[in-house]
Image (cartoon, rainbow, N blue to C red):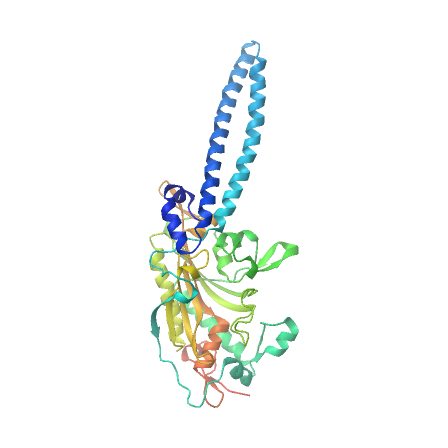
Length: 421
């Protein structure tokens, strides 16, 4: 949520920042409703003060045993009734204003590139793209040859965009997750297995609601929602808390299954496990101070790059354009792995600095002297398991159908190679 005081103090700057995201129109509605709220609140406060004055006079008269002026009593009743009515007007106006405020995205950092989905700025490429003189196989063909993937039976069981991961790929996934958690623990992240069913407030607090509601699975009978990322329960971990600044940054590594309806992805990436409804992920999440958040953002990105380098997966880093940012992000970097089966780079991790946007909505703060201020929150994917498995299988495939496994995973239980059946 944006800082309402900033909107009041400098609406033109906020409007210009929202215009970069194509979302400046609703700001004037927020300002108009806020002006109404402030006017009604002033009227309510004046009526309360007058009611107090009259009540005090009536009380003094009764105490002194003198007659109470009937007109004063009538005025006291009128003020009570009018105050009650205006308080209801105020509650409605504030609710309308806050509902609109929830729809405004975060203000993008000035350094983030302008544009939309196709305007991300490439920052660097790392690693050598492998060549396959005998032809390249995609991950589905490789995985099925290893006996590690069954899409047909998954479709029969659950519908499209589901998969049975089996045998050698299960062992590979377990080694990948264990390696990532071990690395993150060494970097000061506390491993967490969070709940994956959350209340609506957690999704509102992280900025996924109201804008991304169509992508979320809902269990209507229980008023709970399946999370699309453990960012949601990790952010809500310190909801309504005041954190000791001496404890910041607080870093968590969430290990969870995630669920996404992919409602807006009809017809896209339908082959294999690149875009599925259920997947596993290791997610980094940090609570920190405003002064530390930019450096923490770079730190999270460096960890993402280290993981891809350890796995010998060629990748590139892009600075995501403002028009393609999620509602809560002020700036986001994506790491895109080279996918030989698609002959292009595809996103496998991202990391976002959400500044104070989520913390305001979740009321997560820190105290600095007499001042209480919202913390900054950041998130980043350490390993999106399915997409990382794709990159591993396709980049390390061999002509005989086997797949070489990076040494770093062998230390966590993976075999040196996966052999076809």
